[in-house]
Amino acid sequence: MGDDLAQRMIDASELHGDFELSSGARSSVYFDKFRFLTKPDLLRDVARAVAVKLPGGVELLAAPEGAAMLLVAAVALETGLPLAVVRKQPKEYGTRAQVEGEVPAGAEVALIEDVSTTGHQVRRAAEILSEAGAKIRIIVLAIDRGGANHLREAGYEVDALAVIEPRA
Amino acid sequence: MGDDLAQRMIDASELHGDFELSSGARSSVYFDKFRFLTKPDLLRDVARAVAVKLPGGVELLAAPEGAAMLLVAAVALETGLPLAVVRKQPKEYGTRAQVEGEVPAGAEVALIEDVSTTGHQVRRAAEILSEAGAKIRIIVLAIDRGGANHLREAGYEVDALAVIEPRA
Image (cartoon, rainbow over all chains, first blue to last red; front, side):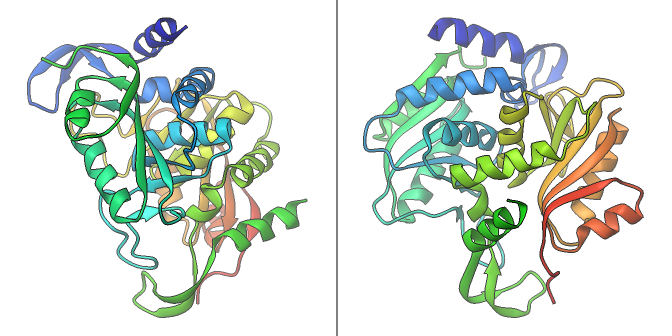
């Protein structure tokens, strides 16, 4: 089932055309992660597969601000666990929080990301959650495009539903 | 049930302390919308109540980028409808899209927002969806803090699960 799900995520998300990548290079293929996150049947199946990866003791789910919010909401509904969202920047008024949602002191967190290529955004989110008092129990990537190794080198436990070759 | 749900959203989200509002004024009460979106039981009940508000013929759900992504994911799982996310700015590479997810030409859309005070962000998202080829069938607000009237004046059909007095 894991491989089948990986193929479904890829099939839903691989676009063909003429695309400029964030590096400035051009490509005839583009991986649009929103495509596998915006179809409810696929989103539910991905969320269930993420839920299976969660070790016992996880009390809180978290995701970086952005597309992964769709996935973390689905995993929260699947597991009954509350969630938190890590902003790129702290909110400028009100709570001034960089982590939205409640983070009980010492809460064991599963940090969830849709796709990670470099691991940078996930690592930054993990650090912000730790500063907010959480313990990062595991990082689960729907798709590892190279980020998992960097995150493991930084000392995190990482799991992924699918591995795709990193971008050239 | 509607009023009970409204009260549950308020109870989950009303924080007491000393807060600076976006206007610069200070307040001893702050409404933190992430609180009602990050608890899975409440998120599910809000999503179900939104689903009940959807007229027949709606083919696609949409939400502005941000907290409402948690809600629109839950409504998509509840209804089986696909979803789209409207970015504040177009993506700078790849698809260069301002609307993420697929928008079939002429698709009848329900635009969903967590809380609307002025209606501005929702109205802008509705305009971007229309430019992308969608038809805005209805706008559903979880909490109307004053935005609904502005959106109705702009010609949209609007419904809300709860109405809270606009901020002073």
